[in-house]
Image (cartoon, rainbow, N blue to C red; front, side, top):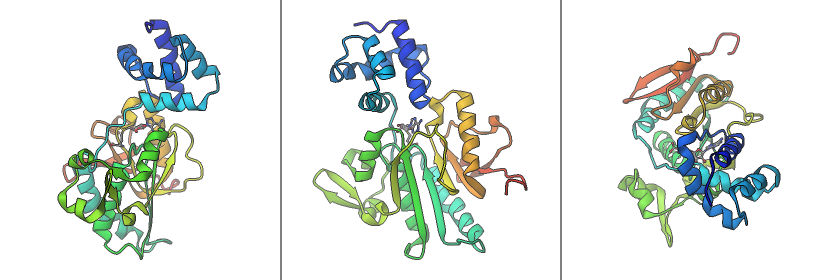
Length: 281
Ligand SMILES: C[S@@+](CC[C@H](N)C(=O)[O-])C[C@H]1O[C@@H](n2cnc3c(N)ncnc32)[C@H](O)[C@@H]1O
């Protein structure tokens, strides 16, 4: 059955309400391709029925399946390389210095906000391991969140196929941080122990999370409209302190949102420091 413009309008508005993703008119093909397989699974004879069930049926399973299907989970270990070099050679050493003399000099809090299947937070954990060596003296927690329960479940397993590892993982790190298992390679416990996975919609308030030293919010804001992006980054600023770092995707440039974030150019990439007024510090 055909997805009419009216069906598309209603479904895309519902998707926006569920996860902030903006599907404009030329994404009709995407809705058809990604949501059509769910129609049988959830016994929907028409697109309108899918819409009604989604909006008014109260089925959590259907909402989750739609979010899983419509979101793009493309990711890889050490994606774009340079942000991870900047983390290793600039942000982390500076952060460690800045922490000296604070109340918790050996505590590091990192948030990978849209972690997909886990490659990003595990890459961060490997960099931390490389920089700090013996981690026993450190109190480290990487919070890794994503709106897609399927992605979060897969990420928590920490098991990757050969193909996933060919994209971004060096031989050296493979030997050091992974163990061969039947279905592929498993991230070693020393790395897994640093990462805590949670399902979370980043468009909802960040209550009770505390402050972070480093936030990775990469390749997710691009799917949101400009005003939602701005609100998201301003809320991120609230969970940073003056020595924190924010890493975004290469096309997610924050300067157009005003002076709230100061761009830092290092190792061939750009990352940001929050501009905190004395009253905010
Ligand atoms: C393209 S992946 C990016 C993964 C990783 N950050 C990277 O750069 O490789 C985008 C991820 O954002 C997640 N996502 C989309 N909307 C979200 C929302 N409102 N809250 C949390 N995660 C969201 C998707 O489920 C998907 O896994």
